[in-house]
Length: 164
Length: 164
Image (cartoon, rainbow over all chains, first blue to last red; front, side, top):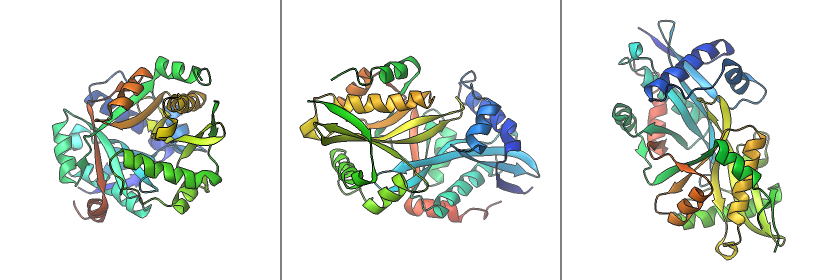
């Protein structure tokens, strides 16, 4: 009945990729994942880590994950933590595992003197929104997220230096 | 009449802080900035950099900045670039400097094989929203941003390991 939270190791990469795929399916984008084990290994456990990851275990069995990285608040002049993914598989829900993962990431933030822990949630995901609110989260609905990717990113980069 | 974009150096830190303050004022939060030159120096130019910064110059004079860091896309299995701040002071607007800064950051993203460049904008900031759309940005309005900070973050961290 015991939940433990531990840092991920390279041996967890296949499980991390499986969780990323399961989360994308839950988020109604089952075909969006092009990540590979090689890429996740390089970017999480190589010379230049781009993310950190915690694994939850329930009675010794993998039961969810939290994947995060440092962002930066120029107002605070401090790094913060951005929680990219938090996922508990359906068969392990209702045991407080998501809460335990979120608490552990919050503890990392406090240890690192990060004044903020931030993440995003889909607007239709009411159960998660309610859960996050109960955890003390505020919603910053005046901010809109913009993204340039793919062809548009290439065009923007190629235009560099070509205009006055 | 020439705009140039260059990487920031430690000597730019006072200017960077002044731009951060000017941007916070533009964003209607003039008292929100608690960042210091010491903090910006440590976090941008120390042993463990948390951000990168580009300075625009117009005829040799500082004319704006772009401050960014790497985030991580688990769907893509690649780091991306998150643009935290983009600012051109009023006296330098209308010269294409914001566009030149955005293009340079896009070029860094492409060089680093980052599939995405992302940022946030306040919902009332119509001039910027129109500009970003013209630059090829899409708006991800189905995502809401959640944040835990201050007392709520401390409480969440302190609760770690105390619940079943």
